[in-house]
Image 1: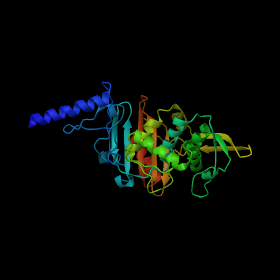
Image 2: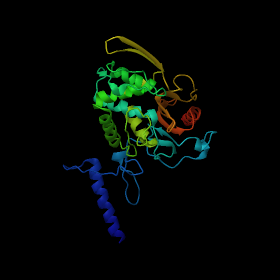
Image 3: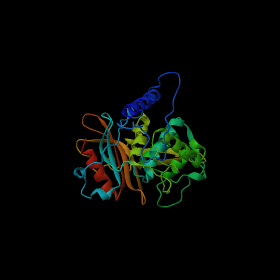
Image 4: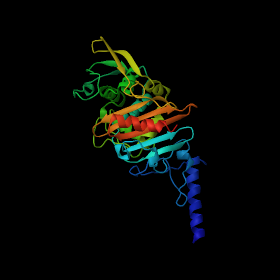
Length: 326
């Protein structure tokens, strides 16, 4: 019986290896369940649970939950999830609740930027319509009006530095044809990245019960984003100023400061770390969130993710404690 099982396991391994390595003339698909509780970045053998290199060779893989010795004074219940990834070593240095479904708030805009950069030129002119008009007082916006225009380059700067929700809609309707069409693009991209515990319904992250992700999925999405030099260039800026145009062609000046407190000088960065930049997110349901890129003294890169912190101070304390591990 043992020999039969070993032969069976060997057969499964050979088939999977052929699928991953692309050997031979035929191609093989490896389906995965998008409703699985774990992101679909790997498949596992029955006995050894070893990862197939084709899926995970360039990714950090979540390990065991981190111990309390890395905890902040506010305690482990003051945030829902946190992770730290060593990109060069391809290691997960800190891990808490990697697969818990949480609301991303404006961290959503990282995926919005990815899709825009994949599908449009930076000098493409975007035109605002009624979907870009947001009237709620508590929503971050630049007060776009129908007919206002700006380039994608301008829109990405305002999206990622200032986190304007009306500019997120501006990108969505021009790239996806509609808000719903863009949401479909977002979900296709998330699945392609293996972020199978995520679902997006809008480009901004404004609250919706059916709009969620996980700390690990957020790493997968952000890891894709930093493959674009333009994205890194934008998120590293502490402020931005530009001039876009109204429907009649008039100049509309705009300037802003980064929402990332490490960049705008409102929160100190640990001495051994350099914050490159990232994306914040805050709603009542999501709490305070931050995904960002940092480097150590040897110029090695790291991605940190903290989600549903009970307040902004807790968010930056926890992120700082992760950076102190570099």
